[in-house]
Length: 316
Image (cartoon, rainbow, N blue to C red; front, top):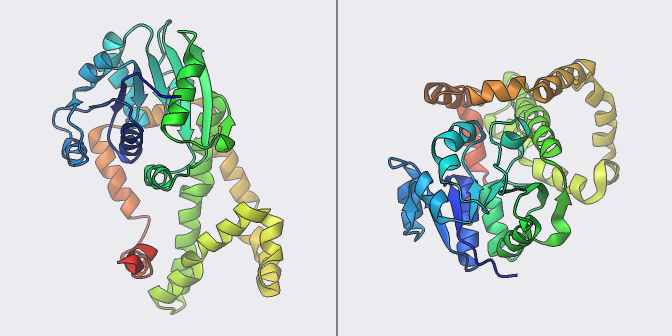
């Protein structure tokens, strides 16, 4: 179905940019809501958007408000600029269940509250759209304030060209908790630490950065692809006997009961709301320190090797 309502995309980071471009390219009227001094304004202008206004103005002009700003600022932004400007009968669309589940944002009665959470970063959302495909999406309706929440959800699904076979029904709670745990314990935090620990071990043993990178990181996408296509058992069916034997011997030694206990502690921090409280307390200075600390979680020689063997470099 053709979406005829105006969409306000608040924020123009990776996800916000992908959503704004995809909606516009599908014929939806889009306005961009950003701070006056936001550096993202120039990016949005280069992308051809002309309606780049303040968050409050964008909310006033739109029937569908897409929350594409970082989770930890949504509560403050809602109180300052969104709540008073939100039209009765409009919709709030969240890309993550965080703010609703942990109650930093509460949609007023008469407003639809919708979750449409992509299973992939913004660049993947955009690339798949351009290829006529889509990443998977979790979806939920948290509040059907207008009686048209499902219709609006369907309109977004069509406008974003989401393959309905990739849609997974969930709740705000399950998406928020599952996403936070998955990215912290496995997909981002846990995985990068595992890679860097393996990389450092090989470097200390005398292997070059290039060789160490190729052994512990370069082939990850191949293994992940096998797991996604055939499961873990199917992956083991398709690798060497040497790799299978070593996996059985070493896997439980590297990822032992201590790791399981640490993961349980992480999970408890997330479900209790303690992690959300810390995240929501981040200040601009704390964000700067965070970015510096993240850079300390890798090393210059690893990053050089990653750039050297990047598939993107080979395309040029």
